[in-house]
Length: 297
Image 1: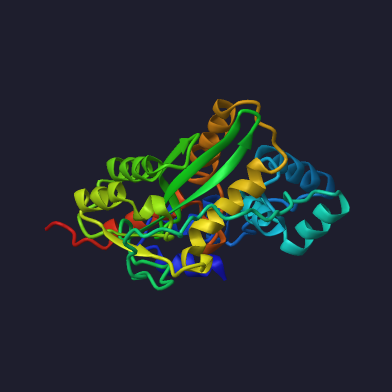
Image 2: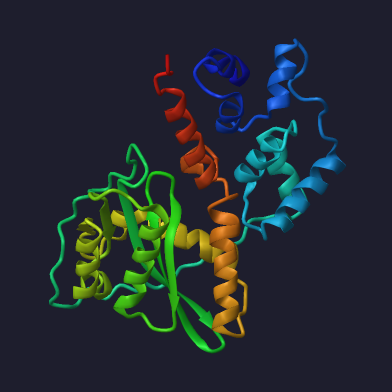
């Protein structure tokens, strides 16, 4: 049982972090310790539907039943996954539909290509060990808008990004520079990307050298070698961009900014992270590291 596990770990970790890691409430745990029910009241059908609709609207249709279930539990409500699935189905509440998108990679060039050092090892043991990057496009009435991102694979957070009307080398160097200034990692970070001309460019190689980073590139035509970054773009497109019409590039930029900084990094529950958001996952890891430090005499 979740509460029993939390009880066993309390000597080593802060209670809020343990509850957050298992998507349960502190009040629920304390009620369990007192011998009562962890949850004060089971949601009625009307209450559950109203909450599900409110969360669906709040997150602009981003959540399917599993993330919706975790979100409800995280807010302290007592409800099962099967019930959430049934209520969403009966009331026509669905996550945004997925679409296919064309690739933006141009690997037909004579620029130097780095070895695939990452080799699909997508689970580094700490932050700022492995970053990944990629480029996608967004349609506006003014023309294409291109987005380059840098993800920290440890917690899948977007640590750097850049938006430009052209897909030139500076879009990836700007995204990497933003990530470096925000995170200030020690030298030795592996940066993995596809073989696109932007990532193989002289400007990008110079920027990686400047920051003390090691380049790694996917094998030719193999998008699975950079699957986490592709997954982020799928989330962005399916949960925000698909179905939207942007009159201007500025309007699209503002919406992308809100998705990344206001939702994805801070609030979006990520299945790979135990349904924590990227920043929640990182803060929980930091708290655990601090708790493991030797206490001063």
